[in-house]
Image (cartoon, rainbow, N blue to C red; front, side):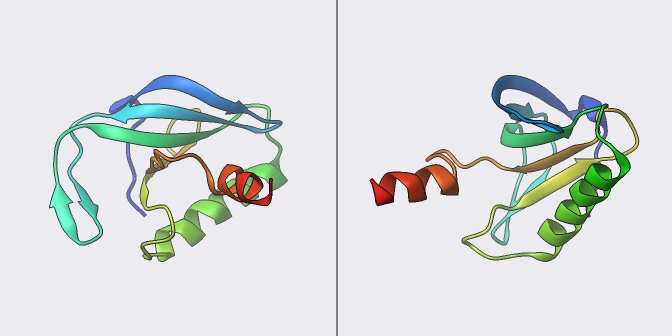
Length: 112
């Protein structure tokens, strides 16, 4: 799983403040990326899930397990893991940004 430094992105907008994570829209600075088999460079928008400093050990393990699972998945219908920040605080998981909302919002709208 790609290790990144905490200064590699600028947080732009807080989407969600949870019990042990915050989710942001962010700008990833000049990190080459592979998107669905095509290498791209330059900055781009990502989603950042940041583990709160108050998270307990179990929540920390769950967070790291999520990163590990995402690192193994490569499918057009699953968000792409851009990288993780684990050597500084807060610990962050950076993924492809979904411009058309989240899956749960899409499914809820489909039900209504």
